[in-house]
Image (cartoon, rainbow, N blue to C red; front, side):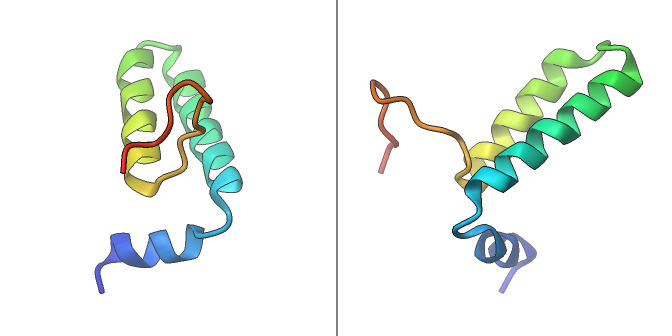
Length: 65
């Protein structure tokens, strides 16, 4: 079992908390770097959300299965 699989298992049922943690982490990095790398941080946050399935879904844009 890979580390990624273990993390996914721990996050199961706690997607909202994980999403808040991703936001807080990104905000912290933005604050520390003076928003110099904001677009890269946003991209990283999006990739984390996609990888761990924590991206909030819109009603008009259902998840791809």
